[in-house]
Image (cartoon, rainbow, N blue to C red; front, top):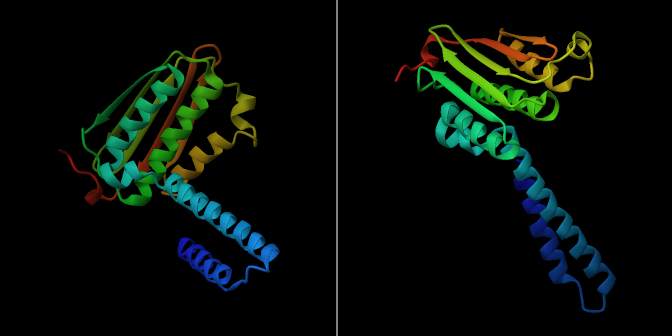
Length: 195
């Protein structure tokens, strides 16, 4: 809806510009600047929508999206990252798949920013009534103080996303040895497909 409204504003600005006379140069310039701002806003809205639900999730599903994210993480950071998915194909409703993707992405982002890790192992497993995502790194670890800090937005986001589905997240760390993020999310039986 926002995108449509911005497009309508852009069209109205184009119409207004066509009605302005050549002697109204200041108004023409101002209208042109406004049109440029609307174009910029349209691009921002598209980017935000894409970030809220990445196209790879829509096109290929959670399994392929996580595998894609692992590849991107490796390229960006040079950190070895392995992902195991059991069963090999997990299909979730759009809301859960977005939450799982965002949890995974946030865990990898935290590793890249803070862990000084050289390796990451991740596993997504789906049973008949729950999904479990475990991400381990061999980095410097997180102190208890950091784990409890209200400024640890990434960790807070991971917990909140799991809790919204009646699940939970545990973050365990040994300073100097690494961190493990374990997330459990309840599933409806119809959500798990064993392929």
